[in-house]
Image (cartoon, rainbow, N blue to C red; front, side):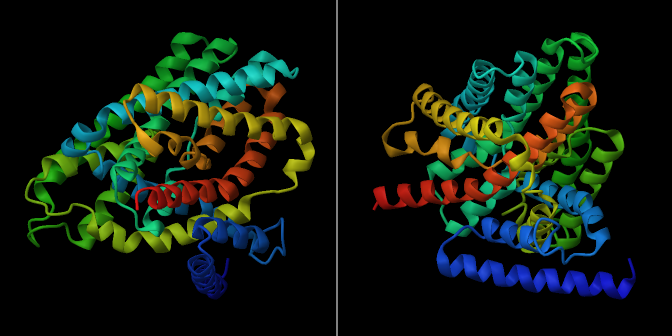
Length: 386
C-alpha cells in the first residue's frame, strides 16, 4: 500500500472510530458493538471501503492490543484481589469452561452432528473475548467486587480453554495422539510461564525507577511489545504471557503506586483499530451457509454460560444478585476461538469448512450481542445495589 493511502486510511479509521465511540456514549450501547458494526459496514460484508491490504494489518494490531489487555488483566491478579475473590474466580472460571464444553458437545451431538466434530466445537466455544469485557467494564465506570471477580475470571479462563481444547483434539483421536497434543499444549503454556518470569521479574524491579511511583510510557510500551514479539517468536501464548507478566509486576513491584497507568493511556487507539478491523474481517454471509447448526450452537453456548455461571457462583459462595450476572457478562467471544478453529481445521480437514464457517459466524453474533449482555449485567447490578 502507498504511504499516502495508508495514512489516509488510518486517519479515517480513527475519526470514524471516534464517531462510533461518541454514539455509543450517547445511546449507552457498548462502544465495542458500535465499532464492530462500523467495521462490518466498511468491510467486504458492507460497502467494501477499506483497501485490500487493510486485512493484513489485523493480526499485528490484534496481537498488540490483546497483549495490552492481558497486561491490564494480569495487573488485577494481585494478592489482595485473590484473597478477596480467589475462590469464586477459580470455581466460576472452571465451571463455565466445563459447562460450555459439555452442553455444546451434548446439544450438537443430540441434533445429529458427528460427536467428534461436536466435541471440537464445544472446546472452541469455551474461549472468551477479554478485550470486549474489559472495555465494557471500563466504559461503565464500574468498580466493585463483581468487576474484580469478572476481571480475574477473564484473565484465566482462556488458560482452561486452551487445556480443554488440547485434550479434545486428543480425544477425537486424529490429532497426533494424546502425548503429542498435550505435550504441545504444555509447551505453549509452559513456555509462556518461562517467558513471563524472564520479563516480569526483572521488569518488576527495574521499571518505575526513573519516575517514582509508576513506569514511564516508554517502559510500558517496551515491555508490552517485547512480550508480544518474543511470544510470537517462541510460538507460545502471548495472552498467557501478558497476563502472567502483568501479574508478576503488579505483585512484585512494591515501589509502584500503579504499575500499568501508562498502558491505559495508550491502549485505546490500538483497541479502536482492533475492533474496527475485527468487524471488517467478519463475513456475515457465513451465517447463511450453515443455517440451523449455527443457531443451535449460539443457543447452546448462551445456555451453557448461564448454567456455568450459576453453578460456579454457587460453589464459590457468591450470594445475592451477583450470582445471576456472571454467565451473561461472559458471553463475548473472538480471537482465541478463531485461533482454535484454525488449528482444528488443519488437524481435521474433513470438518474444516464447518468448523471455520460456524466459528466465524458465531463470532459475528457474540461480538455484537456479547457486549450488550455484559453492559446489561453491570447496569442491572448497579440498579440492584442502589
